Image (tube, rainbow, N blue to C red):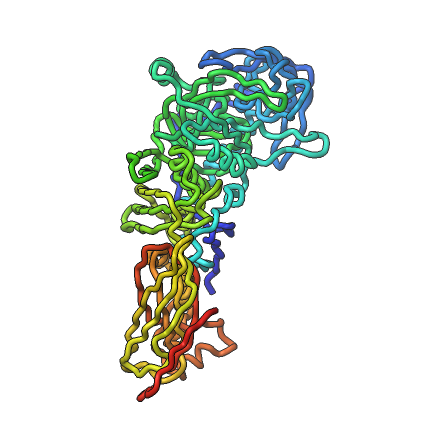
Length: 634
C-alpha cells in the first residue's frame, strides 16, 4: 500500500508535506579552515582574554574585548557554548546587539568562535559564543548529507491526500508551523533565558501592517522585523563591492526589488570563497539558496532589552547554501535563482495603476508567506482602502514546463476589509504557491508570478434569499427553470433565472435542485469525484489547482445530482461500472472506496459576488400532467 500524506490547503495549518526539491551538493574551491587556526573547546579556560571584530557604523571594523567566563558543554545535542564578558565599543552601555551574531572572537590570534547568544535585559554584556570548530563541523555534516540525499533521492511514484482543496480563503499557516527545526531559544535551567540573538530584518518599502504580520510570523523564528531603507547610491557605489571579511556586515535577503527584506548579521570567517557567519541558524533550513549580500550599518539603536544594528543590504555577492544549528554558510561568486513577481494595483476609478516588481527567494517553507506579504503590502502602499470595497483580481503563476495556473475573480464582503482584508484577498494565490512548492509528487519551478488588482469602493455582495421552481414535476427532455431571489447589500432584491435542460434519458425519480455560490459548487465537484483528492502525479495536482480556478464568485450555479456512476479506487476513477463490479470493489474486506458521481450544472453570471445555497426537490416523470409551483426557503 502506498503511504498517504495529509496536506491542509485551507491555509489554517499544514501537515508535514514532503518537499522534493533536489539540491546540488556544494563544490569547494578550497580546503576547509585549517584546525590549527581555531581553538578546540577542550583548550578553553576561564580567564582567557581575546578580542572580537564587528562593525558599528558603515563598514569600518572595530575591536572589542572578550574575557572567557566558562565553557558550558552540551547546551543542546552536540553543541557547546563559551560564555564571554565583552568590553569596549560602548557595549557596557548598549549590551549585546542584534546584528552582532557571527562577530568573531580571537584569543592569541586563533579563532574562538562567533558571538551568538545573549540575555534580554542583561546588566552586563555577557554573550554566548558558538565555538568555530562546531560551526565547521555542522556545516561539513550538512554538505555531506545534501550530497548523499541528492544521490539516493527516491523517484518512486507517490500519492497524497488533499484535504478541503475548495477552501482557498483561509489564512495561510504561519511560517513557524511550516518550518521544521528553525531557531530554538536556548533557555531554562542554569542558562536562565539565554537565547539566540535575534536577527534584525530590515524591511524597505513595507507598511506598518506588513511589518506587524512579519513580526507575528517570523518573530518566533528569531527575526526582528523593523522599518528600514535602502542605502544611498553613493554608499552603494563606494562600499558595495568591498569584500566580505571577518567582522563585516553579512546581509541575507528574502525579498529584493521595489520592496526589500533582508536579515543583518556578521561574518565569522572567510576561507577561499566559503563564508561562515551568525553562530546560530537563521531559519534552520539545512540546505537552502538565499542571496548572500554585503551590508552597511547606519547606527546602533540602544534599547533596554536588546539593542540592534540598523543596516541596509548593499550588493548580492553569492549564495547562502547552508543554514544549520551552529551557523549559516555560503559561497561568494554564484548568483541565487530568485522568483520574479509583479503586482499592479489600481485603487479608485480615477487613480493611475502602480506596478511593483520584486524578486523572492524560492525556499519552499518561506515562499507562501513571502508571496502573501508582498501582495498585501502592494495594497497597503496605496494608503487606506475604502471601508466597503470590491476587488477584481487576476493572477498568473507561470510554471517551468507545466504551463500556467491562471484565474480571475471578484471579491467583496466584510472579510476583505479591515486589518486582515489584504491577507484574505490574496490567500488563494499564496495557497496555490504553497501546494505547488510543497507538493509530494515532483519538484516544481515557478517561473514568475503576476497579479493585477483593481479596487473600487462599495460592497457588491448579494445573498441567495430564496428559490422558486417553475414546476416541481418535469418530463425527461424538458427544461428545469429556477427563479433565484438575490438580496444585494444595501440594495433592492433582484431576480435571476437559471435554466437547465433535463436529459431525455434521465431516469424517473425524485431529484434535488441545488442553487449555490462558487465555493459550494467547487465543494460538490470534489465530493462527487473524490479521486481528485488523491493525485498520483504532478499533472493530477495541477488539475486540482486549475479546477479550483474555474468557478467565479460572481456566478450562480444550479446543480442536479445524478445517480452514482462508478467508484474511485486508490485515486483512480472507474466510471460506469456495472452493479456487480461495484459490489465486489465495495466489499468491506477491501480498502474503502468512494462513489463517483456527476451533476447536471447550469451557470449564470451576475453583477454581484454571490453567497449562500438553497436546495429544492422536484420529480422527473413521464406524462407529468399537472404542474405545481413551489417556493422554498432553507
